[in-house]
Image 1: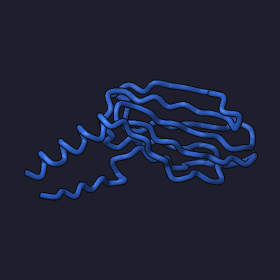
Image 2: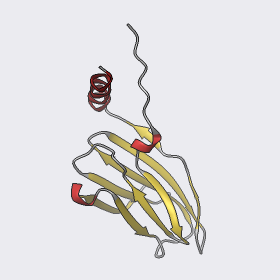
Image 3: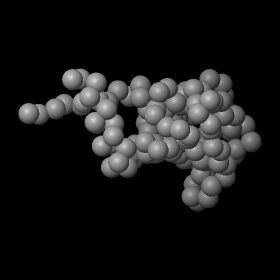
Image 4: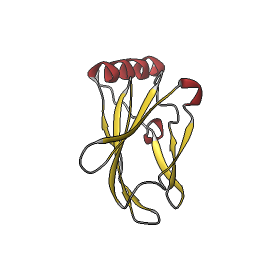
Length: 121
């Protein structure tokens, strides 16, 4: 018996620009007890990190006004894995946000697949 599991992009955290240098992190229903959001500069140095508690997991606004022009990585991590975004800033605005690259732990994948199979039957 073969199974096909479809994972919706809506299940993953997304970034949406809402003002010139401000974006909202929308965690939707990414199944985590707590998330860590970290920002890295082009040298790979962590410049900001924050743990977000479950009660505040829906949306979080980030203002990047203090950051200089350049390329930054935003990494959102939790029990389900981690997703990495690349953000390019000009002097005045966010010029580009790359599609997120997802890395998951095998345990998280196994539990997610089991729960999706159980919901089918």
